[in-house]
Length: 462
Image (cartoon, rainbow, N blue to C red; front, side):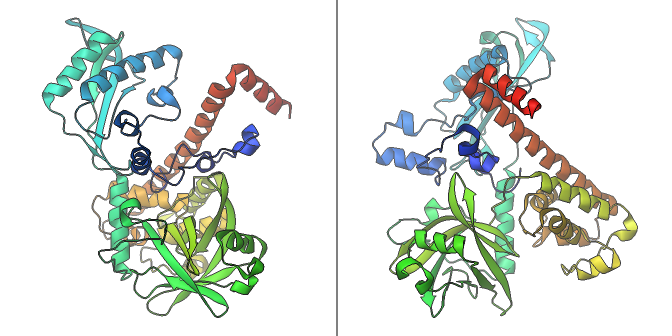
């Protein structure tokens, strides 16, 4: 839900520390790669196509494809349906195809008679990296064959549907990133982002990833992305402050951990904002967070080459939802509850909103974030949840600043503002519940019901 699709099999992004929860670290050598990158590695290693090219399979196994309670019987049902789907669609060249067992029972046909039973949903889509996808245009002949064979071979199934969803929200978010880049005069050339010696090019990076190159200039490191005209980033630490005076990722991380390292993000018009660097646990490893008023950006990867410090950030990185995100949405909702307190001429300067108790959507969320989180992240889960709801309710809106532009639009009513906040609350709440459920299911699967009961008893005793 929150932001560009995360690597949801990565414990750290689910809010789980394996060392704390299970007593061990997880080594994940391919953690920075998405599915297409992993496939390239497989081919480079000489693995056969049936391994490197196989369709993705969920980490929680078939329980992830059961809506409702994942009993042994229901998992067996979806297993049999999956076998039919994979057999019939194996040769169509789609990125992924699967069967999902619905929770509701429906009226359908079986053996030529009306019957009341279960329903299977078939999904099939085309993609490269699983971040964006479009439904595969299957012929009616194939869809009909899928339905007939699933109903014939899977006991209890009386209905089969085919899911035809629009292109994923992530594509719309990438389109919005393009508008944002345009509005800031970030001119991208026919680019190849490359970290020397690492072979990272635009072909291997999602569109929303940017590479920055910093060089030592007097008492700081300073640089830019070669395709972002007029923007500079600095890191106020000299090479002499690094251990042994040596520039390395380890020494930079150590300095950020031990010193209060700041920097400056400068815009083409000369305006600037402070950057605060911080070491955080990310994907079961230490990583550097670059905190700015534009958002908090993780260094997805970093390398030192030829006295240059290079790092990659995901511009649309959104941290996993936390209870404080839900609390921020609830506070923003209270601030905007009365239409008298709604400010419909947002200028993104929130001082007046606080003084007059008249709130725009953006300023209510910003103030609530600071109140509930102790800091402001432009891309926190609460704010991005509302942005993505606006994407859903106003298709192809073209907003450069969705929160401000939606708030100020002539067609937006006070009730509309409250509605997007209410939907965002439900989505964040659902993400928190799903994450908690996934953790409980994983624990039960990995350690057995007896261990789960003992852990529950210990928790109650505490």
